Image (cartoon, rainbow, N blue to C red):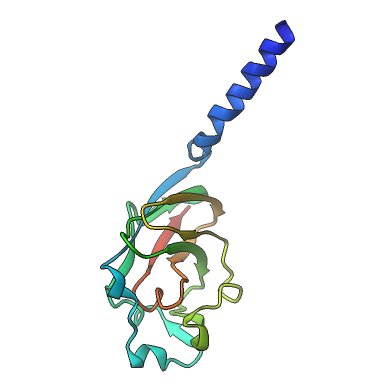
Amino acid sequence: MKRASHLVLAAASLFLALPLQAAFADATVKVSLWDKGPDSATMTDAMLAMKGKMDMKMASMGMMGIKLDTSTVKAGKVTFDVTNDSKSIIHEMIVSPVTAGETELPYIVDENRVDEEKADHLGEVSELDPGKGGALTVTLEPGTYILYCNIPGHFVGGMWTELTVTK
């Protein structure tokens, strides 16, 4: 009887600890994925004419975006608590390092999205339905990171932001 109660207690402890994953991170960043409705993903001809790279400064049209509750965290384990605040559009969040002085990400023009593999992505919370959420925990070194949505057309629609990681 004693052994069975220990097993029940151990199972309950494990079950309760799972949602506390963020509590073991050094920092938690709340992320909001937002847009201005179904027409947000419309791209201009100028954006579609880009030749293989996308300048991050040009990809900020303001029809959709990513909002963080902080733009700076200390190096270590970081949990991104992501919510898709859209009412009608699926979004995702990907984390990639930014090389010092670089303002371009590798872009696949025909697919209207960033080449995630060439951008050295560190992880993602993929395809969140409107109103849904998810989390990603990664260990980040000091530097600059870009968080972006890579659903076709969303990056050029303004769905990216930067996060600074300090020592």
